[in-house]
Image 1 (cartoon, one colour):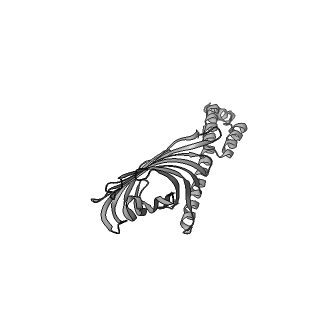
Image 2 (cartoon, one colour):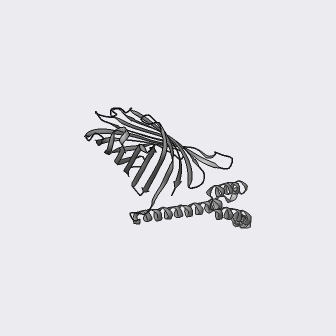
Image 3 (cartoon, rainbow, N blue to C red):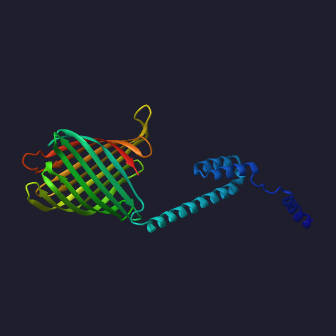
Length: 314
């Protein structure tokens, strides 16, 4: 009697049907989603599979885990390859830039229209970023040059953390109408990315500076100063229709810096709106305010400049 009592439950267990494997159509659906390489698609299909096949959750999760592990391995390999490529790059490699040419209208010391051109280059490494900028505004009126402004600047950044960085700056300016044939500034200090998002970015920087000005009257001035700067970029929308035939990306960007010393404070404010015509060509409208607290005799302290340019990225 006792033997039959033990045998009956064993027989019942043997007769119970084994847990079925994940149905082949469901497996095929998940594998097809995985083949797309789109994580959102895979997640959506897996969620449906879990809902309709609650008894197969473990197997479904195993398929998802294998996919996610593979994606993580691929991402790590790509990141390592990118880091290796950057470390092994030559001095002239990995530069990107944009060339800008167009017209300007100025008011202040001059009320005129002329030509403007600018080239900006950037090279970003693991911790270092290098920025080069060359700009020129030029106009001749009745055989005489009434605006001739040139600027060249080199600004390296060294990243301390994701937001904190050290900057350096070496800059040369020439603007006879503002009263100097050459003005040199060197600065270095700390910067911080206050906002570092996909569409909105704001960075500030500050540090000591040294400036030498060679004046049109033959004298020169040098002084210790302080530099404060701000760089702001806001991608308003991905697609803005500028004309009936052209879509555009609008990038409302602004930059400002001030060099402050006891003799002369200089402030430069630039605000711009960009509209992308295609992947490389962009139109840009910008407004610049240049202020010197101590202009030479016969000059005013504030110049404004409105530029309309075409920008080519490379």
